[in-house]
Image (cartoon, rainbow, N blue to C red; front, side, top):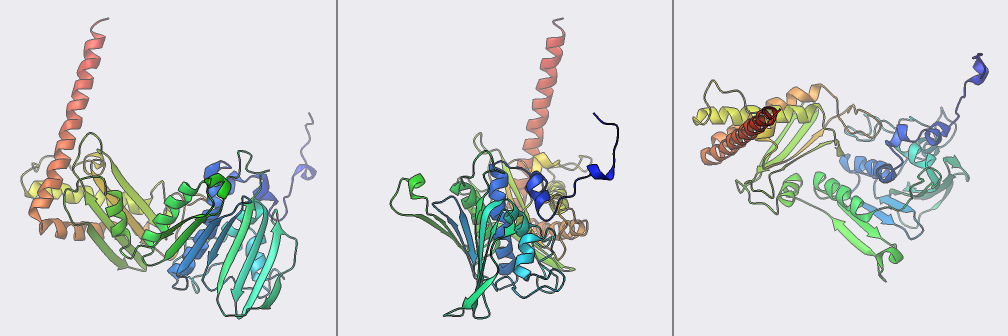
Length: 411
């Protein structure tokens, strides 16, 4: 071992080498979760086009050779030469890490504005083929392990459709546990996106006939005009709702759009659970974030206030806790859209924008209180269920403490 440390020992990675060297820094892991995240990155770009009002259809095809194709009918990635890179804009977004392919001028709301996704997918693919239709031309280019192996070619389009199609095969050298995609995983993700974008049609096609054991592809289409209200109804389809109608809250302040659908349901031994799903710019934040914290706080305050109004809680009683109000028989989908989302980590599992917190809290407190005040019977049932959950938990803790005391007395 040498004691010297000099500049000669420092490794400088060029282009997308850093992504291939440390893939987990960019996609979280090289497990199936990271593998499927590659497709989500491409789909997110198509969703951005939908949010901007230019895309009405997205197709995801699982191909027999192990590749996947994502196609949208948006405007198509620009193909002109970029002055800073000397390459086409298309090649730049696929080969330059952190090349920002989104701007506030083109996208008021975007989930992929950080400009990392396409380049990372390209870097971690054995090969990638991109086809763009725009300005009466069909452009195409091929890449292998993040490097362009052909130049950008163009030919006249017989018609004048627009859109982008990206077909890629994950690199087995990176994903050592296998590169086989799971259709059910995609079905869940794409269904969520269809609920979040009412009217958008998303088609998932599995062409892997050998895996299917079938002579024809499996095709599923997702399109939900009712949006997240339909989503909550779907999630609660196997439980008895405490109130029939789904509570819907919507608001817009300082460029931040908030949309919430929620419903309480009766508890029994089989369904004493809750679902709180949060999305920022159509990206699922599995670790929540500032807006979800604000929502939980607001609901707790409102239900506690209702409980006091109806005499179910004494004024001296503390505010009901989150597990009493939100974790027993409650389903909610919270979707926020904002111009400059700040996510924690490259896989966007948590939104950290502080300005969203007060907007969500004040909106929910006002709208939910008005809704429940006008429906005294529903409000009372919600508050009563929360109080019963609190009392049941207190009894459980008391019994546990008594058993612990009895066990200690044996020694």
